[in-house]
Length: 304
Image 1 (tube, rainbow, N blue to C red):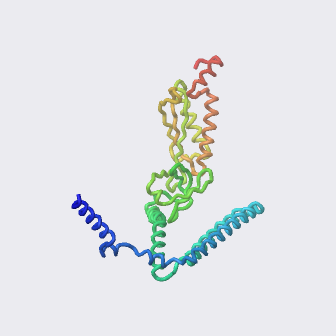
Image 2: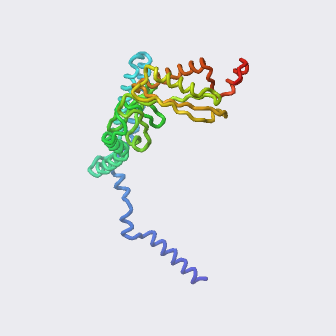
Image 3: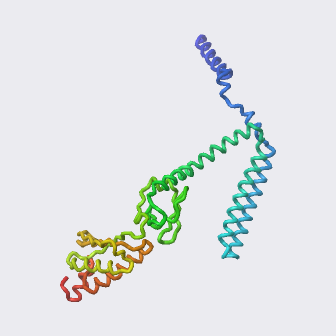
């Protein structure tokens, strides 16, 4: 038993020596915490707490003042909000600079460390901006669309009003200004309706019952398109017909593809044609593909 105990003691002691006396190469890999702590001014750290508290109070005062001014001068509300944002931004930057100046000894080594960290942070934050800038140059030369084109992108539909180096701006039909980063444009599918031309094809769908007069329906739709003041008559007006299943009933879909003379009249053109087609359908007894029209016909004593 005693020899085994001696071996165990030697092993434990050897392990203790290895842990207590690391090699010189291993010791060189351990950072000197005392040197890092030498960069910090502990008295300045305590003073920085009061600076941060003061800056927080100042920001709350600015926010409350801006709210009162916005409520009193409603016509200058946007200007007040811009000034509030700018003042808050200045306070953030000033507070950060003061806290760093009070808490860190700004010798060449500290400046090198801080500069490296800032360079990394700025580079990481600007990677999307650089990607958008390169994509903007590609869009300018490749020209997938032009200013004034009517474009559909990511569920948004409207006119391109500006193509910049960072982003593309679209004015939707609801008069909302949408800003799209250039790098998003290049990676997604974009649909352009006119590509530099004023006129654009506008698709319009009409549905009628399977037992209705299809020839008359086509004639009515065609006439409503070509007689509209928004129609671009230099282009043909095809009327396409196909059988579809509409609300569990067999129906016929008539798709008109006229051209509007200017893209800005797209929606008035659609409204004009649909209104006159509906009136003509009612006048000539052309009924939609639904059970309702059959019940109405039966009540009137008409065989559907």
